Image 1 (cartoon, rainbow, N blue to C red):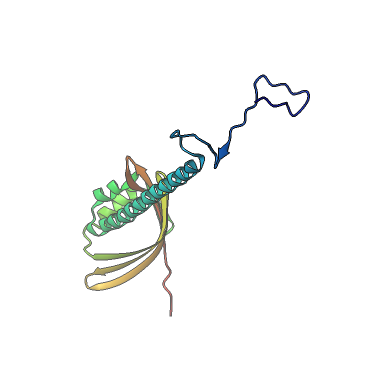
Image 2 (image 1 turned 60 degrees about the vertical axis):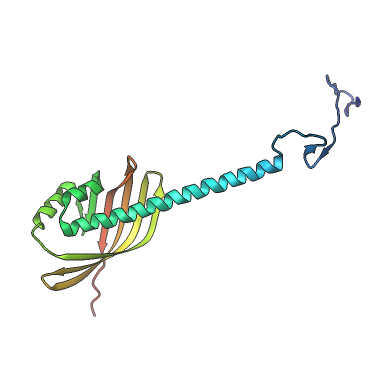
Amino acid sequence: MFLKPIFENEKRAYPIRFKPYYNNTLVGDTSNKPKPYIMKYRFLILILFISAAISAQEKKDSIAIVQLLKDDYSTLQTHDFNAHKKNCTDNYLLIEYGEIWDMNKEADSFKENAHTVFERTDYFDFKYIKVLKNIAYAVYSLKSDFVEKGKSEQMHWSESAIFRKIEGVWKIELIHSSPHRQKSN
């Protein structure tokens, strides 16, 4: 079953044979090779599983970050500096009221306020959490109710924080806190 070349000057070293195909499959082919249309679906299913796994990990990381912040803010009431330090990286910074505090300045603040007894209840309203591998950031609003010696006060901040995952554990790298101005009536 040899065919003549389409172009006169074309030379083939092998004969051209036609094989009958139906639905991209050689007629009579009983092999168990994956068919091209099945491969398309396998790839699509694989992509769906990968995206679901990534989404689940991001949700798990977001939950861990929220819990880390709540746990860290509770150290302010208990004056537990060691727990606070454990929640933070070695390069931790706090930016508040126009000042930049490192861990040493925070340690001094914890010592100065160690005798203060108060109740603090925090209400977080997370606006945005973004996880990018081992780095994450969050934007949130924080309202805190303070009760000290029978006197209550409420404060409100807009904050952003940067986190780093170190050896599988999320830690706080930076918190930037901006107090809301009190509205005068």
